[in-house]
Image (cartoon, rainbow, N blue to C red; front, top):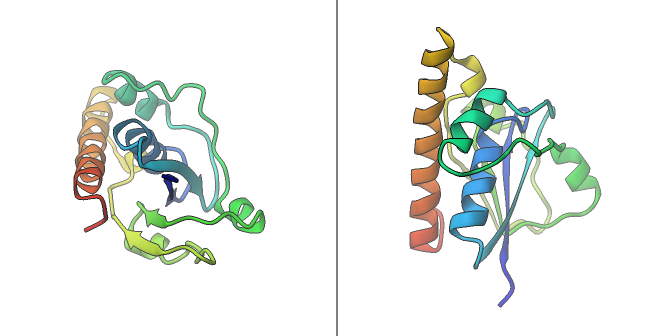
Amino acid sequence: MEKARVLFVCIHNSARSQMAEAFLNRLGGDRYAAQSAGIEPGIINPVVVTAMKEIGYDLSGNTTQGVFALLKKGERFGYVFTVCDEANGERCPLFPGSGNKIHWGFPDPSALTGSPEEILAGTRVIRDMIKAKIEAFVAAGKAE
């Protein structure tokens, strides 16, 4: 059986989309092949790398990629999830042949303020929200 191709998109491909990709590839890798991309690719958020490493996911070698480069290459996805806020989710392109475009809004870890410990704690909350959504998606076999 061919795996369903899934794309997670956020603004910089530095946090939320990277976490979602990692979770789906590990938790649903038997049925899904996930990638992530950003509208304006940046660099991986080091706090996200730390928060993910705490639960056994190493994102330290990950790089970011642009969503428009995937579009130009003619990539096709069964699911395209926008994981940024609603306004920026509207900036994500429609992929020809993509079966489902779904918005899952999550707070942006890069917008967190406070001490380094408070920012890490907030990032953990966002990480756990994304993981729970991915677990529900895998359990249901589809998006809600």
